[in-house]
Figure 1 (cartoon, rainbow, N blue to C red):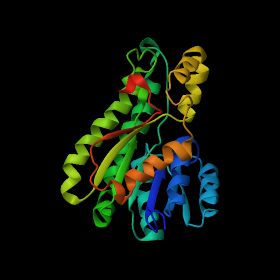
Figure 2: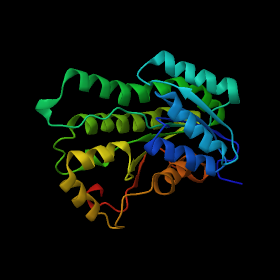
Figure 3: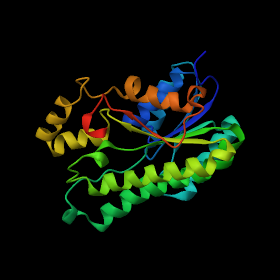
Figure 4: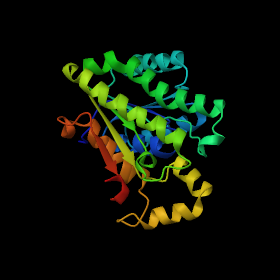
Length: 252
C-alpha cells in the first residue's frame, strides 16, 4: 500500500509540468486524483495517465482566477469522491521581464492566478480538509531567493506572497488539524523552460551550479516530495518550505 492509499488529492495546473508530475507521484502512492486546469484536454490526458496507475481520476476544467470555477471544482470533487484529503496549488501564469516592462495585464494575470488562485482554492477546500484532517502544499520558486532577482520581480514576488499565505494558514489552521506547507522545486517546469529560452546562458550556469548536477525529474524528484508532505509521514510538519532543488547553494 502506498502512503496516500485511497486518499483524494486535488492538483491545480495538472495538465503539464510540475502539476502533472505531482499528480502522477501521488497516484503512484495510491491517491485518487482530481486533475484541474484551464485546458480540459490536457487534464484529461493526465487523468488517463493516473488511471493507468490503478487509481481513480477526475479531470476538471478550472481557471483558478475565477472563484466560481474553483468552487465548482471543489463541489465536483466532493460529489465524485465524498472527501478531499490533499490540495496542491500549482497553477500560475508566468510573466518574466524587467521591472519597467511589467504591464497591468501581466501584473493582474500573475497576481490573480498565483496569489488569488491559491487563496480561492484554500478557502474553498478548507471545510473538506478540516473534515479529513488533510493537507495543503503550495508551490514556490527559487527565483525569489536569488541574490540577483533581475527579471523575476513579478513572478517571484507573487510566489513569495504565496509562501507568506502558506505560513499564515499553517498557524491559523493548525488547531483544525490541517497542515499547510510549501515546496520550492527544481524541475523542468514550463516556467523553467521559459527561463531557459529567456536567458539561456544564465540557465546553463544555473544547471552547472546544482550540486547533484541536473534539473530534477518532475515526478520522481519533485512529485514524490509533495506526496511526502501530503502523507502521514509528514504529520508533524507544517508552515515550512521544503527545498527539492538538488542542493542549489543560493537557496540555503
